[in-house]
Length: 115
Image 1 (cartoon, rainbow, N blue to C red):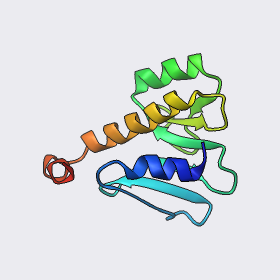
Image 2: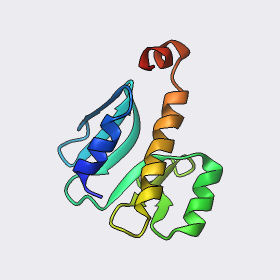
Image 3: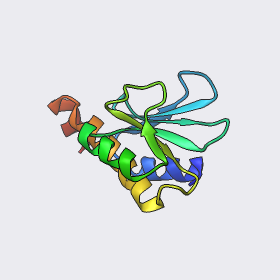
Image 4: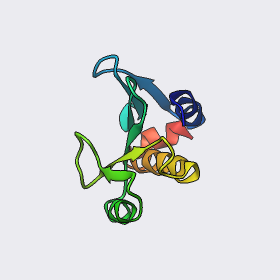
């Protein structure tokens, strides 16, 4: 997966924006201002994604390309390789899962505005 493919996939979701608040080397994806994904730009080999804690453990046990989130809360975030060790279909599903978790945590009024 390329960073352009990730941006294209995320842009299909309601309320998504991206910026680089931590400097030019990390692209941050947000829904209604809340972060759901972080991608390094210097070498795009991984992406940090929010994940249900129980599912995160299962994924880490099953896929060597999924590890606790680098520089993130390790219970709620995974770092996922995008270079082929994790199937593309699963990678896109995990991006969607991260988006859905963050979107669900938004206030009801904000969620309704996204629909």
